[in-house]
Length: 184
Image 1 (cartoon, rainbow, N blue to C red):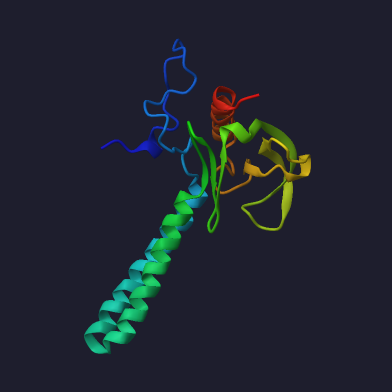
Image 2 (image 1 turned 90 degrees about the horizontal axis):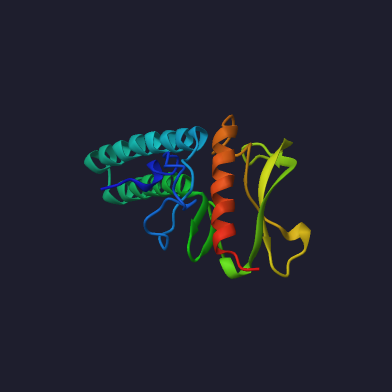
């Protein structure tokens, strides 16, 4: 079974006519690999979940079933949070562009997309309130003001902190999808 998140950065033949080397363009895919910060935090959450699951087993053997069920539910919430954290990011398909957040997912059909641009601006560092200078990939939608342009990804988020080459590859790929599917 192929792992699509591992094929995002694969090299493809430059002589190919296609800028988007994917077989099934109707399937949602992230055009980059999750960053080490995101994977590291998710791994720590899963490690914490393993301890909580172990505690649930101990409580089930020595305590009441109700207490064990509550602790087991907490472990499931931690696991769900870790998996959702790994799923966060920008996804593309032939249907549109999707930005998956921790709690909210927004999808913009290609018919609503005018352009996807990389701009130099102050960006949030790892999603925290502190801002630093960096680059951001912004989505320009039809009928929206310039200040309503959502930031899709930045050089300082959990996927690209310290990985500017990966940010450049990811923005180039998203811009190629937008150039191919966005209608003027």
